[in-house]
Image (spheres, one colour):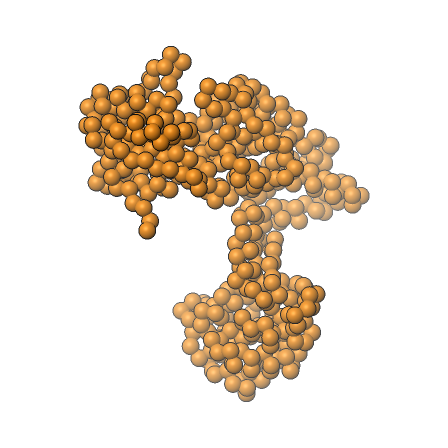
Length: 473
């Protein structure tokens, strides 16, 4: 358990007044004074570290009561007066004063201090001889964040941010590396050689295999590195979501911060690229209407070439790679070339834009299905779409890349029998701070979009769900 301790009273006014140490609590006896919600928070932390807890409290929180009934903690149902404390304190490794009475907590801390037992008065650094940092745990990997007791809420907020940076399998990876240390040491006696090997392993697909619990594949990769094989490359096909960086998945963020090179589209915003590892090479391969930075075949070749050279290649695509993102074509090229790859879905433009606009994609009263189509015309300008399916009034139709062909789309749906007042919404730059939403009908929406000079990226939503749009006050 990570704590910060001071031999006597802590001085929070001076920098350097604390020295971080690690205390082994497994099997150690700890006195927890208090039985309410505050005590529950500390009790959960102590149980995670294997402590033997005595709870001194007249009343117990339901969670604490459950711990007592299951035998996880011992309950002393007495008042926290001096005589009781002097009886219970000897032999304790730590003491937490976690009642809702500041005076009681200070009394407990003072008595513990007199017996040279480290004590923490919760949310009261003055009488405390140690504090407990906010912690992120991934198995045996633990990261502690502390403000020296000055701002515990800030420490908890920083912990939440760190949570997003550590994949859930980090603990499994650490356990795997620990279990193979002796084996690697036998093969590589030199410390520097071992260090380089483990660094290569962390950059290798073997590390991800260990994170996911696939020790057999991890061993295969570790053996290959031990035999001098060059670390293998890999392609990560990742959906970046519709624009708001906060909509990234944790998996996407993790890969963005570990890639050697990034091939990205024009729909990937600068704010998202700022989250990519700083020394990664950024390569723009995006396509805009009537203007291609790279043809698809060249993008495929670029991914294969970089991966075969040993790079971890991040193919970052707006929205979800498999919804009008040509992800299927790119995967086929990787399979044909024998390149390892991973797929990470993203929040689609349809999901993100509809949600940020307050429009449900389905609704019990009017839309029991949702159809995704692309409004991109063929080279001859013809829209080859499933018009009969799109004209079904019991569904929502979401049209990607449909701004340039919006007049034809509206005319086609009207021609298939949808009424002139059928609701339509256009969402421009959805989920971003500059998002604009326009609502109208099949007969008005094309002119509205033209007058507002709507440009891509924009999404068209057709159906009665538009009438159910809600905007937060």
